[in-house]
Amino acid sequence: MLRVVVCVSGGGTNLQAILDAIDKKEITNTEIIAVISNNAGAKALTRAENHGICAICMSPKSFSDRAAFNRAFTEKMCELNPDLIVLAGFLVRIPEDMVKKFSNRIVNIHPSLIPSFCGVGYYGLKVHEKVLERGVKVTGATVHFVNEGMDEGPIIAQKAVYIEDDDTPEVLQKRVMEQAEWILLPKAIDDIANGRIEVVNDKVRKTEKSEIKVQR
Ligand code: GRF
Image (cartoon, rainbow, N blue to C red):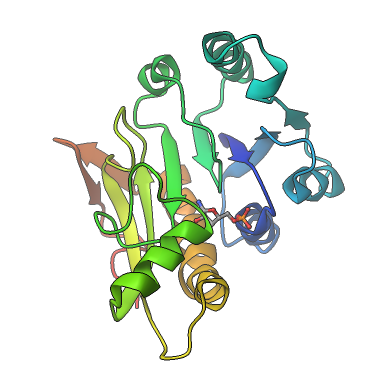
């Protein structure tokens, strides 16, 4: 059984997609042991509580400085000792020490086709604003392992989403979630839980049974 901690900051629709997929047995062999939010008001925490999952709030604001938060956050994670950490809309940079301790055991969902529209400053609605500003015709979402860089870890899965003429950032954000994020992230977790993914030379290799080999 893969023991997972999900980290969130906001609405938690990706968390909900994971919980629903576990309930429908589309993700197997997986248990969410805790949800951690940096934001006490995150709806994601209520979603976790409604599911009987331990919901923890840890905000950098309640610590004297970032280093103190990073230490406490890493200690908490080590105490929970998950097999996998899922960043599902988590707006806090993962401490370097935690990345090292959980090497290739942290995954993130990013709402663009990496390496486009990612890195410092590209989060939430901003990503979709930049996509529309640039006028690209295709965007999408990416699930990747987290390394020391920003959105630079090995890519697990990507799915393209087409841009429509009258898109606003909000409309596009919703379409990327519906058509890509809520599908990709549960499939990636299921693949990891069932040993269908390995990292070789900093690249993700999927075994034959992988369900996310091709995403259309
Ligand atoms: C998603 O678009 C995710 O890709 C990004 O932040 C958003 C979180 O949405 N990193 P939600 O909290 O899962 O609804």
